[in-house]
Image 1 (spheres, rainbow, N blue to C red):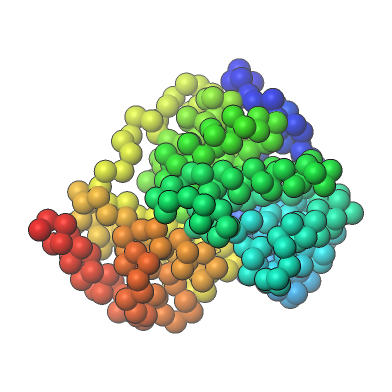
Image 2: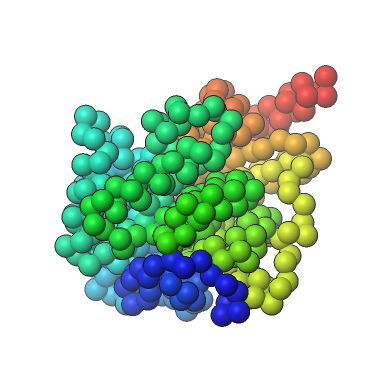
Length: 380
Ligand code: SF4
């Protein structure tokens, strides 16, 4: 990427590498194994390293995960990033053994609700600072800070994300902590481009982690991501990337290989994604899965949904398939038909309305029924 002009971001050290400040764009992936299963998770980390991963993320939701992470640290030299969701206090357990902590501003509200979010961020900053850790402020379209959401009309996909990211940067700066990167993710590549452009215009100094969240299955998921990355990276925006793909746990190297190919294509001027149209037809969104997946049948289900709905390819309808309750309920609110998977049942939604819970065997015919109704209503 040497010949592509890059934004003048500041350097942020993450383990053995530095992102920003013109350094090569780092490629990330995330483990989809159960973090507490140390042997399998270490095997996945090594698999991703062999594929060329620069940073590997894991999810930690419990004390047991945090304990496992300490053991994982002993067994790998990978640059490790840890994903925190609601339980921000787990940062104290994990910061000593990872290189970066990712928190989501929209998830800081679930625990200790009376405590101001600013105090929670201060806690994270103190812990990161004491343990030589970087931070990612990871803003996601499906879990926006409710206070930011309320400021704008429901259809505004950009400003709530942007304001949330900017106010967290402002607080981190005020606290004297500058070792952070930011991400603004959406499942629509056009929204990713718009949000990241707007952020980079306001904060060209802050390194950006780029990603199209829930891009779905390859090859469609790769193309969606490529469309966004081409527009951003060729404009000098982006210091680290993740291609989020719905693939089985031990095929996660596809995320790294796709990321490398996209960067090579952009460097060579091959703009493949921009030549493909944005989705005017059926759009299947599916999460990349991670350790939080509640039933391993999830990836299979996503593939079956794609096959079973091909007949509706020409209809401008969005369907989301999500792997767990952490992001499933919120992110399915924004699509026409949403499925989020529990251990035994799949929850089916139409927009924000829940239609019911169905077994993994029952869900496909029920989804098709709902899809047919939606098509008939729109045709009428
Ligand atoms: S929806 Fe759940 S399983 Fe899927 S990537 Fe997000 S946290 Fe992981």
